[in-house]
Image (cartoon, rainbow, N blue to C red):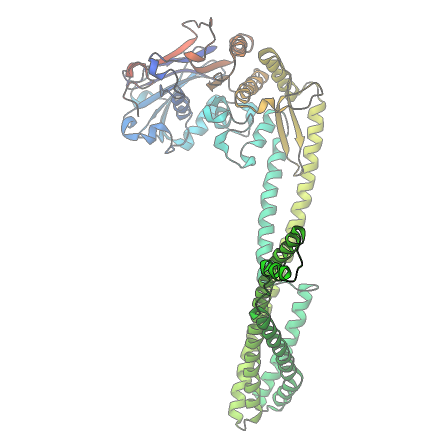
Length: 595
């Protein structure tokens, strides 16, 4: 599949662009002296990649220039002619205003003009964009990238300025590896189903882990088996509830009286006594710390001491005065640190005292209530109190049952976690076995891509280059590409901006050449990439790129600024698909004032 022609319903503003099937240049000429040193020239060469992507039915996005400046482009209708791998052609009609309604026309001759063709003569009319994508996918028939559709490979074939930061990952895919790593693995000849499944399993396992954390926080932490502890607590509470209900039914509260006496003597009184003792010691320690805090540190004046010793006829040496001054400074620092420590300790003790006092208030209220229950002679009052106790216990029973339900959910989720972890382990092993098999194969697409890339680096950059993979601790494949030294270790030289760009271009070419006899895209569009290379490497790259179409049938489209061209390099009229310049609107992609 190649790009043949792009035109519009406004040829005076957007002139038709015709591409040859081989080597194509989109060149921007800087004719005005004041623009020579500018990094950005706004000629429109970078917008052309966006426009082609629009022709590949990219969804409407607010940052795409057609919609960012909708008032300028709303009346445009664009026509994109593509050559299919079977030698026939398809033209896509898509307007800016009604961008979700797509027309298709199949034809056998190239460089057609269907801008005046009525709707009735189009083979497919006003298709909604999702249906249009399915149809376009069937037209392109890129069987080598199945199950991905043509949009995925078109993304890699259209490298814009933002897509040269990483060799394997495009900016548009963001940080989620599942959006691109399985596809790259597939291109390199690995089993992408295993790669995708491994990422999906990690997502499921992480979600279960988050859910388990939520459930565990809700149920609390128990020493021992939480289900057994909860069952024991439920049995105890149910026994108490049965006893209280029996008393209410029989109108006999002797058991409650006896239990209340037991709780007062063994429970409440003991805890109150212990807390009173703790409160006493806390209060005593706080008083001691306050007294210590109120004491002022002892001061000592060296000069006064020296004068006193002089009167007594004794001279203090300089070393003694210096040592003593240092000692005083040390004492001052110790005092400051001690003051801070005392303050912190007082804060801790005062908080403990406040908590202890609050608990004592609560226990004394409970004691008062129970004493009142014992001394009450009114059966009705005791009935009311026992009813309240039964209500409270039933509430606790419901809470325990709810926790038991959560405990069952935890057991279920833990089972899912174990099953998914086991499955993930099996998938990781499959990835390992598959990688070993691909690496050892002398006829794999992986080896072909590696050889193509190494040849590109050697021929264009006069260095040794390498593509490699490894299986990381998560079991996923990690991809590497760059320069290597004599020991075949990667060097940091390829991390620089200029070399990273040219390596991205070399990788794209290596992949495209490897798939030349399969159902794959037959074009590459690189927006820039030569800017920061030295002239000798630019010459070698252009020499290499010009041979690719003839040798491998790949259509190559490169955009550049004339100032980036090495001296002596010239292009033929057939190679130059479009010339842009900065001397007036006529030199721009869209012949209208810049936006």
